[in-house]
Length: 110
Image 1 (cartoon, rainbow, N blue to C red):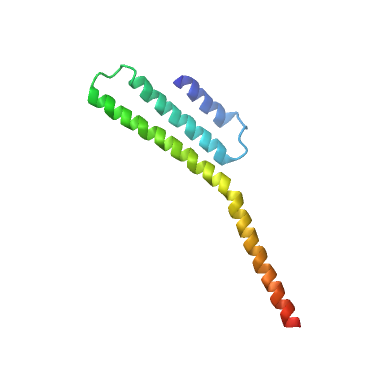
Image 2: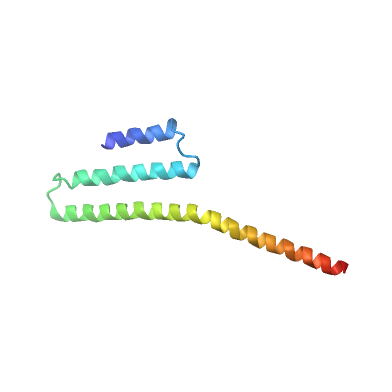
């Protein structure tokens, strides 16, 4: 499983053009890298370590990695979905400023 994920990351880096933006490709590679780390933690928790305190520590680190992965994806999705709205607001503001300038020019001529 881990080897397959490493091959997928290599494929994404060198051959794949499925993502239109560099950000999408970076996010996909970050997701796959985090998936490797999470898989490694699951392998460790599968009976390889007998010390209870160490298992608790590995479990806490695993929860941290999963939380970081979710947070990273949530931030990326939020940024991507808010960009058009922010751009639209900026354009409305510019249009409003331009209309005010035109009105002032028109008033000066009268």
